[in-house]
Image 1 (cartoon, rainbow, N blue to C red):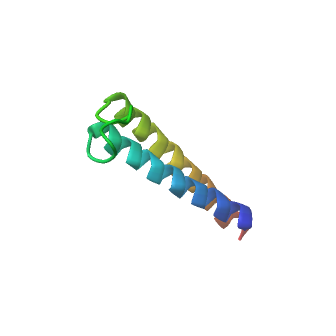
Image 2 (cartoon, one colour):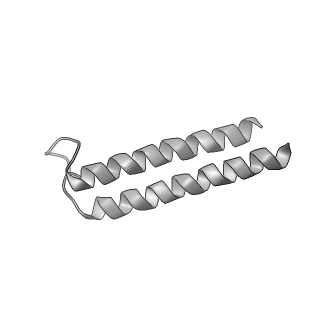
Image 3 (tube, helix red, strand yellow):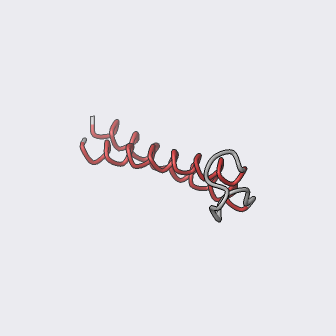
Length: 68
């Protein structure tokens, strides 16, 4: 059970980073001196990172309910 909780938490953290990267790519947050600021590529990268985090959360949830 602890491993599934760790997988879910890492998925949530990954999703949060992906959302932050998307906002930086849109120029909403972050310092203007950042290489990610207002860079359209980071919008796509952030979306991919959010999807990866969602997959991790799904995998952790599946393994949690499978062990019960």
